[in-house]
Image (cartoon, rainbow, N blue to C red; front, side):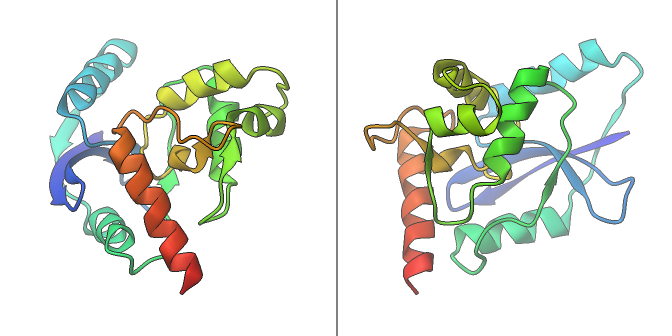
Amino acid sequence: MLNKASFNSSIGKLYYIWLSELKVPEVVFLSNIVKSFENYLEELRIKYTDLSFRDKKSDEIENSIIGYLNGNLKGLDLKPHFLTGTVFEKKIWLATLEIPFGNVLSYKEIAEKAGHPGAWRAAGTALNHNPVLMVVPCHRVIKSSGAIGFFGAGEGIKALLLELEHRLISV
């Protein structure tokens, strides 16, 4: 049984799917794009035919995200749970999880950390498939030139998250 919900935040409405089987909720999906949410639900329904969903919010998840976006928390202490993704994508996502708050790495550096030097374009594609916006902080991955690069939630949001973290590091 998976839980699904949505809530309003400073970057718009956020849609999420989560597991509550353990003490700490695990985030399966998080996005600000309703179409991505609907597509992900359908992907899970196809992949796991016996899976069911219920509408249920998580105060812990929502409060953590709102606290982070309001600048009250230095990062999200939320655990991702990957129900989709290739082995390569999961390696990239796990390497991205290790980027410290307020820091950035290039797509090339992430590919190297994941054990795939030279696969920087594929790393970018893997991050574009990241199902848990902000939890796996793909906004902390930029081009080698220093340019922000693509962000599935919107380039403006990537810039906003990077600025938020930079501002909090300076405090």
